[in-house]
Length: 206
Ligand SMILES: [Zn+2]
Image (cartoon, rainbow, N blue to C red; front, side, top):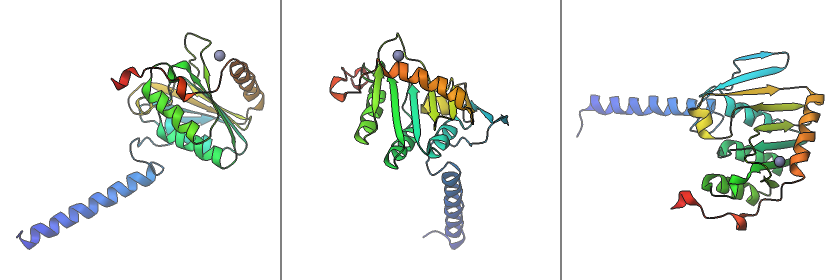
């Protein structure tokens, strides 16, 4: 048996630890792993900037997707962020028209990217593969024909937690968003639908 004082101490440690974790969970938007806050480094004239690592880039992307009322169009090079994938699936399921164009590595040997494609496909989200370039390197989210989210930030845990990255959220700019939509449609025109049966040997699964 532990002395009574010692057991009380351990109970106190457990309670304090639990409170700490609950606060972390709530401040991270309900998901562990990625505690970057959503505060922009600065917001000026409707433009907000975020910097990685852990500067809120991922949370900012999720927030924009969660706020979408009508359309979300995404172009992504690397896409392994579960939080962003879940936000896109949720937007799709509440009736937002979501379309995603991924780089061809999703079907060409990148196992993590293939899994994300398969998850989104299972959720019914339309996904297309742009294999028309050496790499389809865009990282863009266009929301409701009005807001453009772009920067160096790839939609990955590493980009959120480790890399040096930047992300701009440019809100209330329909003419800018229209130019991005026109570019999106151009790439969509040569991007076939994602087909999980065409995922080639997954070298990372060896
Ligand atoms: Zn293209």
